[in-house]
Length: 204
View 1 (cartoon, rainbow, N blue to C red):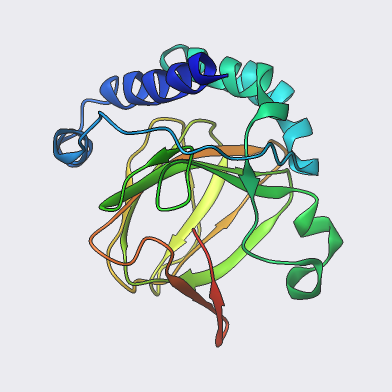
View 2: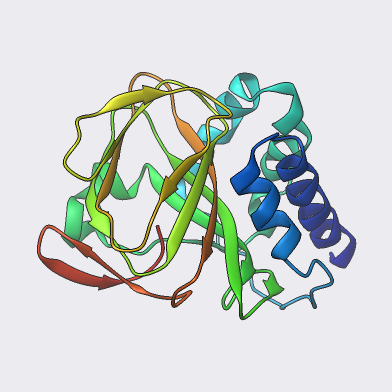
């Protein structure tokens, strides 16, 4: 199992290296990649059924990582910040995240957290904000993103999206699922996100 986790970190790092963007390069350079493994029990979620389609949609540079996620989905510890009581069963069945490294991830890092978010088709992730800066890179295209007071606009795979501290943001998928890589830095790594006036502990 350790070998598989090593591959997860290696492919996550390699995927980040494919993006020629100053913000991403800076983030990658600041990460200490020699991280100890944290032993976590597998925790699969209903949203993982989206991975088969996500493999088909992912760009070539991200495919090794996405294929590993799909192959080892049942071995990884997937999380959810919210419950069915928050947004309903449809949202919960189509939502989940994997922290690759951070304070709760498969690898220990107390300075930065990073991982992957899944949203199924036709899902709205409502406006929310948090103290930590967040860098998102969608690995599938077609999802609409909103930031601050702006409207929704479609982002394609490989675009780099930065949410600075406490800036409100939302996502709305279309007919295809979303897989997005994220990096949290510069704030509490298990912060409380505020959504529609409600404060909830969690990520993304």
